[in-house]
Amino acid sequence: MRSSVEVSVIVPVFNRFNLAREAVTSALAQSDVDLEIIVIDDGSEEDVGLSSVLPNDDSISLVSIEHSGISVARNTGISCAKGEFVAFLDSDDLFHPQKLSRQVRELRRDTGAVWSCTGYVMQDVSRGHKEVVWLNDLPRKFWRQDCPIGSTSLVVRRSFLTDGGGFDTDLEVSEDWDLMIRLGECSSPKLLEEPLYTYRRGCGNISHEFDSKWEAAWNTVIKKHQLSGSSCPHYMDRVMDCND
Image (tube, rainbow, N blue to C red; front, side, top):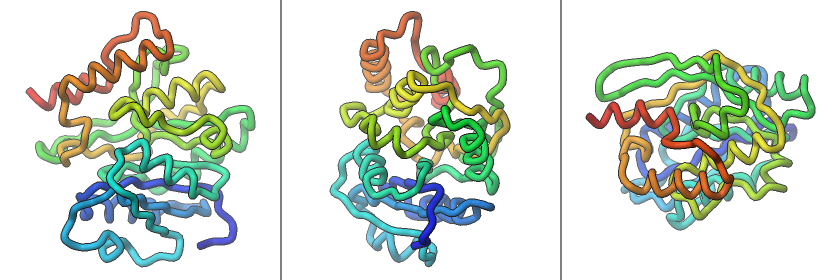
């Protein structure tokens, strides 16, 4: 492990090892940033061990836990993190090479900001379609009205995550929206409008498997944060479209 770590990248994995390898490889390809990659094996059920398919690099550490869900897996990674900043990378997503360095640079310029987020490319793997999503024209305090991004968009100061408790483990889904609302209560984000990661849809990811638990989770988040006029997060419109 490197002696100086700017960013700890947390990659929760449950099965789909081939996708996880590609995700971790995209983290290794980051430029101009010192990082560690913490892979959390959330009780995977593959026939081979995750360590056998990950790239061989000293910056990667693997932690195995019993299957506990995405929030527990990410919080386990946070507890292991050494970086000043923490980034989250879902196992079916891909970082673009400049993502972390760009976000860290913006956060260093504004020491009062605790988080940064970026636009993304949505890739529908099953249909071979790509859509570029720019984070422009967002309303003020958008995080209290909508969830236009996922956790892979975020870089967060580790001090906020350790002091604020990380992800809500009572939420199976919409845990990223809940975190963004709490981040927004602390500071506005350093917003990079351009797409700096790829969200791959149609790979068996949880947000593609729309059912009633989403509505229950949204209602829980809305009640928890006393949100007025909030409804289905906008990014889920695209998810529901792909289920038609």
